[in-house]
Image 1 (cartoon, rainbow over the protein chains, first blue to last red):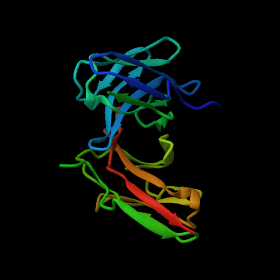
Image 2: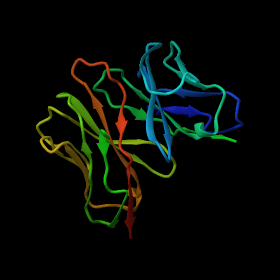
Image 3: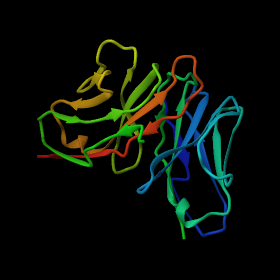
Length: 113
Length: 118
């Protein structure tokens, strides 16, 4: 069974631009979560989607948004990029129950110049 | 207060030896889950092992075992017979409110960088 895939793997943007990251979960998984990883803040939860509905949201500004499609694929959007948004963005999928293990993708490394 | 504390920023171990990576947690929930993930330099987070708060036995997965001491709120990862490929960052994570709850996020510790020497 194929794992979680994320595209693109690397991205370079400039301040003020916006970016969209994509995540395809493991087949059969209906939950997708997004995390931001930086050297300073570590791994922080952004949001979680299940059946196209956001169930949980972390403490990030409204510039960070996401959505999930009917095939469980998810996108994350960051508008008006800031230098501090440079990070590894990790997507994780699970079956969707609160006790289920989350399996992560390889991440998208975003650099904001 | 930090919910997950990993006090060892870095650890060194000789190949074929066992190593213990420490993790303590803080929660007022009775029902929660503890996870360990490995992150090689490539960046992908690899799931290693899971322990539920009501599990009476310590979890084991191949060379990985979790030393769960509920009263002390610790969930240490033990890697037996270390291999060169075990060199990576290791993260302890917790999900709270797993009994009838609606919390789907994982809270991570800062991680421990393990280096296996030949």
